[in-house]
Length: 91
Ligand SMILES: [Zn+2]
Image (cartoon, rainbow, N blue to C red):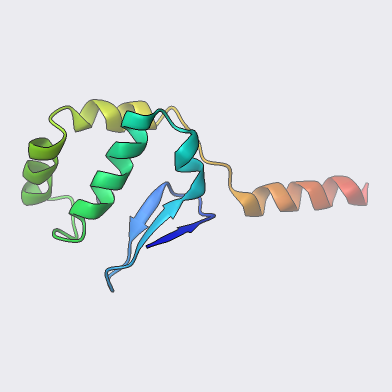
């Protein structure tokens, strides 16, 4: 497992490595939990098909609601921030 800077909240690589955005720690706990569970279920189902959905519902029955709430939060893209600062310093 890695915790790193990424635009995404988390993702699971084909080799089974799960990567999380450190900014997850700033989300409401139940929303952060949804992201972690989502990625861990990808270790079993590498898609968003019916079997993935069934597993998610068995673990977090209202996961669709949490998914929607998550869309209200935007992770800061560190690359963008750095470029922005560089441009500002150049002025
Ligand atoms: Zn997914």
